[in-house]
Structure formats: structure tokens, C-alpha cells
Image (cartoon, rainbow, N blue to C red; front, side):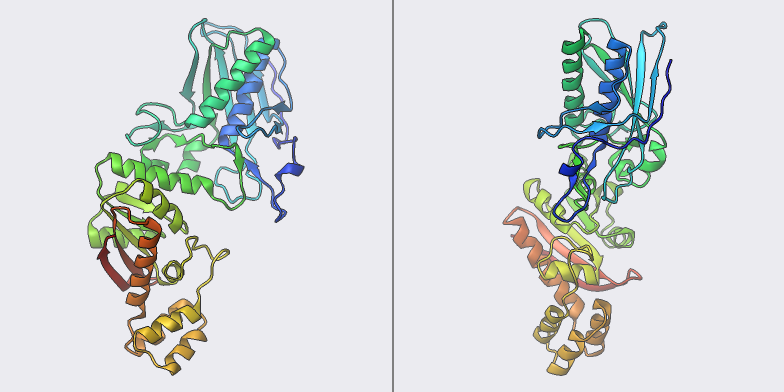
Length: 384
């Protein structure tokens, strides 16, 4: 039995990771699990762990990963097993799974058994319909499963194995990490999901968050929900519940990704979508921005000043709004002047949302709130 350690960073193709921005790409949990699986199965067939272990991603990239831990067990009543582990490197993306230790334990099965997946400690289990996996299955998504199957088959062909294995994926502290993800709300219990469609994490694409938004829509539809709310944060969620009485599985943690919600609902409609968020963020949606993050879009005070004019404000108010320090200050100036800037932003944001929906059979209403959760603007439901 061997137990080795390494820094866990990927060693191959590092230059190819750099975007024109100079930011590093990272690797998905699915890529890490595939690399760990490949190393463990190779050790079962050859007695040696490849370190670093190379894999091929769906788009042809060939990174290599250093092993953070390895163990080759002696045969017992459950058959031979080997474990390999990779430390996930998310590059420069603010990913909650960055630094997580992804383990794969591979056990040989009788010929004809195929590849069987198990959820180890820290990997969730699906408990609700609407996800791309059946209830009761480990939360190892379809693309990572196929990646692991492909690499098992390649290693079997190279080293004389049958390719019949059980793969148990586990994540150290995964259950704790999962509390910072959508998994509990989606009905994935016990840990994180093993994700990824390309194997690569693009910095600040927040692909995992967007994937969670999509799965949230799927779960809501599978539960028969016809009214969902896209909310920018926890305060917005509380307002959505207070105003509309929506259950938890109808609440979409939209964050800054308004476009992700609207584009997915365009393809997978529900009868009604309520968008709830802070006044400043929703003023960005009203101005045509679909990514509401402060690093990628800004509150446009000139746009707010033009809305104030449309609402009956004079040139002096428009000038004051243009010079305001924040969106909230602009809102307060208009409130003092009797100009309903909150409602104007809500209506314009609703119309922008409908434009993105492109005639999908979805009625949209919008609620703007201030930082205390007080409603400062509303737009009534409107359909295509």
C-alpha cells in the first residue's frame, strides 16, 4: 500500500490556459474525478500510479494532473481497489470548490458488469426529479460519467483489463462545501455535484452558477411550478416569498446572471416569471445589461436621468440624478421630487426581459427593492 502526496496542480498545457486577459483557466470537478479515476484504474492494472496523470477533455485538450494522494489496496472480500486524489485548481475563477480534494476509488468488478458509479462521502445523491440524473443516482453529471467511461475503456485496452469497475467519487468536506451551492435546494443531498461539460473552468464565467440556475428551472418545472422568481440575493428571495408566497423550489438564485435565467426560460417556459432585485442591479437590466455584476456592468446615471425626465422630472432633477454618487441616491432624489423612478426602472427592466424572451409564453413582472428589502418599484405582469 502506497500513500503519496503532491501539490495537486495540473502540469500539462499550462500556457494554453491563459486567456487574452492573462487569467488562468481551471479544471472542473468532472475533469479532476476523471484524472483520479484514470490513475486509480491504471494502478489496479499495472501496480503503478501514473503521476502526473494525463487525460483528454471533450474538446481535445490534454492536461496532466499531479496526484495529491494514492493508495493501492491488497485484495479483500470486496475485490481489489485503488484510490487516487486530485486537488481541484479552479484557476482564477472564484469557485467554492477551488482547493477541494477529489478522490476516486476504483474497484474491479466481474466481467460484464460495466461501469458502476457510487457517491462516496462528500458527493451528493439526487432526491428530486427534474435533473439530468434519476432519483437515487449519485450526483455525477452525464458528461463527467462519459469521460470516466471513456478513460476506463482506454486504460483497459492499453493494459489488458476488462473495463468492468465500480467508481466511487468522494470529496473531502464536500457536504460542508455543498452548503454554499444550490444542491440542497435542488434536492441533491449529502455533498457537491461532479460537474463539467468541457472539463475547463473559464475565469469569471461562473459556469457552475449558471448550470445551477438551469437545474433550478428544471426542478421547478418537474415539481409542477408555473410561477418562479429570479432573485438577486437572499433579501430578494424573502420579498418574493412575502409578495407571492412562492415555495423554495420556485426560487431561482439568479445572482448577477439575469441573462442566464431569461435565456433558459425562453427555451423551457413557465407561465410566469417574477424578477426581484436591488434597484441598482435592476437598473442595469433596464439599460440592457444581462450580466449585473459590478465588474462587468455599471449603473448608468445618464440613463436614469432620462427615465426621470420621462417620469415628469425637470432638467434640474435630471442633472442631480446624473451627478448622484449611487443609484440609490438617484432613486431618493426622484422620490423627493415625486418622480416614480423605481416604477420606471421596473417597467423598463420588465420590457427588456420580455425582449430577451422573444415571444416565449411567459408573463413577467418585476419588483425593485432597496437594501433593507423595502419595495421601491414594481411592474405588473405582462406577457408577449
